[in-house]
Image (tube, rainbow over the protein chains, first blue to last red):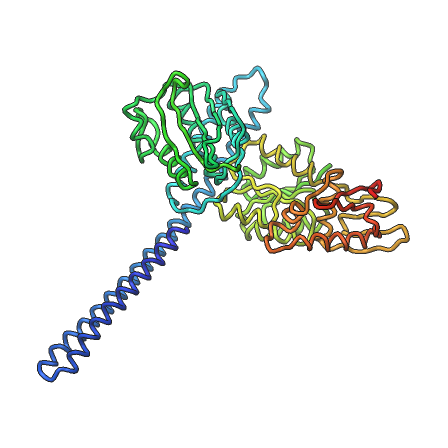
Length: 282
Length: 224
């Protein structure tokens, strides 16, 4: 929303400046023609035609910008309404599945419900990623976010995954964007890495920043693929996924004033490792 | 039993939440429009209002503003609108919680319980012969004199009572009672305390004790 408004505003300014400059030049040409005694009719006609063409062109450009602005607003409104309905439906499915799971007799198999809940989480992540991709300049807040409680909350989405957080730090970030980054990393660990355990280490990184190292104990990725991770549509050697998760992560971390790098397997972390640095609260 | 007003227009989600909240032994009324919510709000005191934002006959933000202006009912937003602007608006209104959809059932119940635990105060509080009715926003002194409280003063009194025996910081009072209004000076808190003490006939500051450099404390047994 913010992006389309500011861009169309800039378009209007450029169109107005262009129109003012060219019409001034044409007017000057016309006035020169009027002052000349010889062949002045040619200058007058050229200048006049020039002005008419420029004004008509300028008006056409302004109308085109307005039409484009309206079209973009309509698409955004549709997208917002669509995602709103989708999120409400997802919330309903998730709550009903969780209610059923709670009421389910202990002895009964719960796998179908667990699979259903996993699918809602996957949809939720894709939906959030698509929202962030569609609004690359959307506003982010600067909030105090407690990393430990964020991971504790997110870990509920993958009951089979053991998430251990070492250290205790808070960061200054947009809570929703930070959650999206962490959720993508956990999802990748489970789906692409086949990990059963994730370790999050928190430590001060100097200059008031916090370093957060998220290491999974899964399959990891080949070192040759690492440089391309975080680029749009880059996948970690698999056909699955959209290849947008890590791209969204990197974009969001950068917009929050931080950095995100990916490391290959080491003796301490046999799987995939993501290292984030974000402004801290100290 | 705590009374909860649930405003959610989605049939499926509303029904599921209604059932779960009732299982939690809460008295729940589920409505689907702002008009129905306003009628329910007028019918009595509520311990919590859970509001969706995008409703068929208007915005839940507008409804929340009216609730905050006219009553002491705490508010919890539960919405798919999760942009920075939406969240800011929710907190500026003074919502106790802002829960983006979709969410886990466990988290929803925990947040509801948290708001009820921190915000719930009995309708009528008796203190040293005075009777405070937070529903009617009145204070009756031992000599039978009855005074009416402003909504904001009532909210401050409720916050002090709910937080007792802890001392409530002035900045915390500003955030929670003046709803993140940056322009309000801390003197506004002191003025509200003066009005409350007058209503309670607490000239010595025994019921609402001043803690120098920090804030105020509810001391019903007499803080001295």
